[in-house]
Image (cartoon, rainbow, N blue to C red; front, side, top):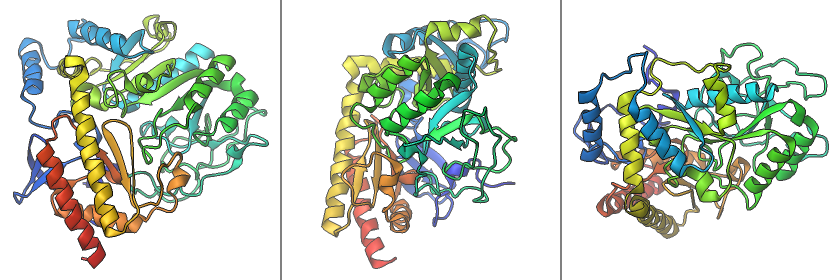
Length: 456
């Protein structure tokens, strides 16, 4: 057997955990050890693992209908959930459901190409959009006179500490003569062997948060670009926020050049705000993809956006079939999740904000007491924590001086002290985390920090 069932579940320097059961926000391993969880299944488990109301919503659906649709009919929950998404998400006029975030991104790309008649997708170094071939690497775009020609230096491993498979170049086919030649995708941390020949040749890559590079790229190549695809907050690499006015500039330039803009909100959707990052930041894309927290832990994804683009699905000009699309238990989980997040004027988000502040302030104080530099940043519900002397990191290059080896030692020790955090220093906060959970996690962090200093 190949071992762990996702490459990103590796914890460098730590023994693998075999978890037996979960209660609330706590895991118990095969030896009976208890852990406070801040991984939340890489984000989806926004309620943790013991929320009674969430489980009851799923049970009621299982008692009413089979676990999957008949294949020849619709489910009323599809309409109910779509209506909620349209109500809360600014870009959402129509919605199509799937199972995974990777699928949703693939469908958004296919829709954009069909709608525009153009082949290229413009993406950004360090952003992650699933593991499918077409967005798992790319071609550094050559734009004369722009910083886009500079390859980021600190891009040798992804946000989970995973080294690129093989570490070598993936050659891609050349595009039309007026587009940059496909050189190599060494600049992107998400590499894999086994990609289809030419799979990444239609994916152009430039630095994120550089509006000059973005403007120059669209000026040179917009006639060939179907879609601009980005994380609106770079949660997969340092939780880097957009620079002031960057997203507004991107939106304006996409509209000017007739290029569709898609926000990958698989992490940010329904976690940073009820309407996602686009609602929190005030910038509306043409399309958006959702997953993870959408159904609170059950597998579900969605593409939401302009009706004229999604009309291509209704007309069967674009196909996005799937046996498990609109999986009824997941739909029920998502309806419950959105309704609960919306209840009492979004009270859940205020709880998350308080817990997040408690944890961030406590970790900052521990690092200060220990004389260790640290960076703590991230949107509501997600914290990036690392040993780097920065007040804010806007791009992956800002993390080049991070003390990766020391931080991985701390993470392993923190795990041994009973706290689980994700790869790349990411911590997810649930409304069901208690003040006591945070206090215990901070006490464990202090012990782990002391062990780092002692080397054991």
